[in-house]
Length: 91
Image 1 (spheres, rainbow, N blue to C red):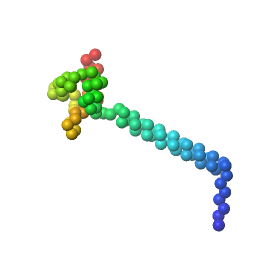
Image 2: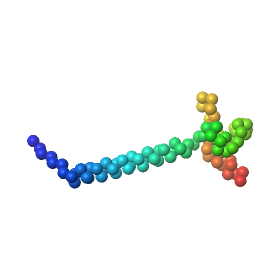
Image 3: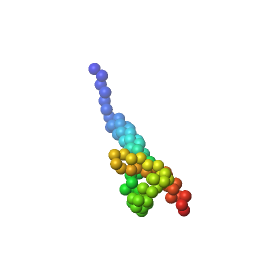
Image 4: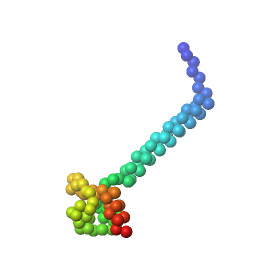
């Protein structure tokens, strides 16, 4: 029978290894969360609030083709880069 003795140094090393792995997992998850907080497509109500515009103005941008949009289950989503470019060009 094999006798494996675990001492305090072994436990300390194991603890440090776990802490490093937890830090890496947290770092990886934060990068993923940033993507969710900064989506490529933005819902119309968010666009109206952020850009301080009416639903009619947003509809006009959609009809004239100035911004790309998607309609998903009755909700419109607008391309973030199109909105940024549109309003950066007007300044």
